[in-house]
Length: 320
Ligand SMILES: *[C@@H]1O[C@H](CO)[C@@H](O)[C@H](O)[C@H]1NC(C)=O
Image 1 (cartoon, rainbow, N blue to C red):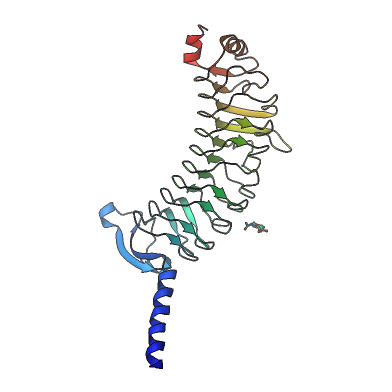
Image 2 (image 1 turned 180 degrees about the vertical axis):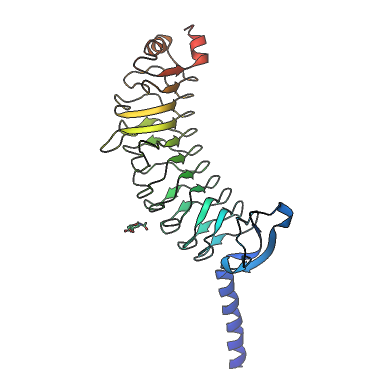
């Protein structure tokens, strides 16, 4: 009797434990080497917590893909120690949670995609220290990002957070990400850009960052939003298109150079205090409810105080 009970509890415990720890359950894994045409790719079904031991031995996967599966939780260690892969695709897997350590010692030469999953937050300890130049987190439900979630990603060049549920920007993000120069935040619900918001992006004589903030709910831009704490600030491209900007603060572009500034489709009627990007820049300002006399004033400063001003429809409407 006692033995029987013991046996039953062992089964229950064993079963429950296996359930909890398996990241991959009957999941199709594809590995393509550099020379493969698609039909020759290595394909296998895996049930395991760790992916690494299931990769073909003796050959490197240039592209590893697990897609259109059901992987609610990426447990600690599940993709750890994979170091020779160019592209890692984990798209459309209904991933809800990534445990810290899931990507420990991961090195991806090009890009990693977690697009089209169900992530709601990015926690500290998930991405720190992993090596990946292009990281795609688009099309999730991310509304919270830990302050240090992306710190120490020393290879990160481009981060795609578009089509999520972010309502804020934290100027403390991205400490020690010396290569990061493209940040895509379009299609979120951001309503405010705080002071020194992009202070930690890589900025040098050779690299000026690109920031896409289009299609958010931005109403307010802090007058120091695009500034750097101790130096000139230079952006290659800033898009604020399709937001709710009505007013630009005085001197919001003082000591800030933006090569291409997109302010189209906002609520700007007049540049009361704030200006546009200066000489050698292009300013897109169409799709705003311009008061014609104000737009006329802007036009008069084109190629002088401001760079080029592009507003085809508004110029036509105002007969400028
Ligand atoms: C980033 O690196 C620094 C220096 O090694 C370390 O003190 C810090 O804890 C790291 N941050 C994270 C979030 O891992």
